[in-house]
Image (cartoon, rainbow, N blue to C red; front, side):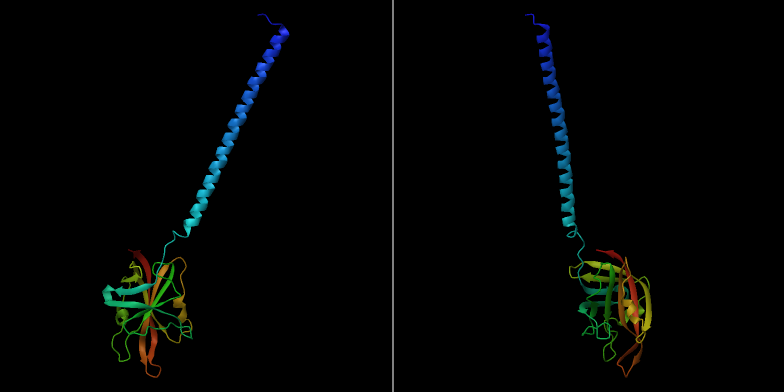
Length: 213
């Protein structure tokens, strides 16, 4: 069948319009799906990031109070109790001669900060107490702290010195060194002062964390 030229042109124009519309629709649909997929990926990624931040605090290490201290080289073994500060700002001491006292507001074993532990040098009759042998501790000795979960933390002694009980800067040993997990051990030292029922010095032993297991 022969069609007039005008009819042919109209049919050609109609087919072109249909094809063009289909192409536009396909391009639009493809672009829409791409944008939708990208937005969905962004939402999923944000959700994962949010979930990670939610659990971040839960994944932080848990530190617990110490319950036992030992220095094998010096035959020191003592259970640990919590102690606070006295009215003058000095550390309180354990009530039992064979116990050590952990300053409850200080750092815990393994934690960044200063783990502070003190103990008696001798009892009221001059007999050896928990930290009697601390005077013989030397640089390189290993101090083991056990926490309430049974984990062990090894600290290596790096310094040992005496400070006067009247030294205005004596409380500086309680301060923390930023970025370190350190241990400070304190006991009596020097000469006995009969009128004050104490010694004129305090022996301070400093150690740094080297391992945990």
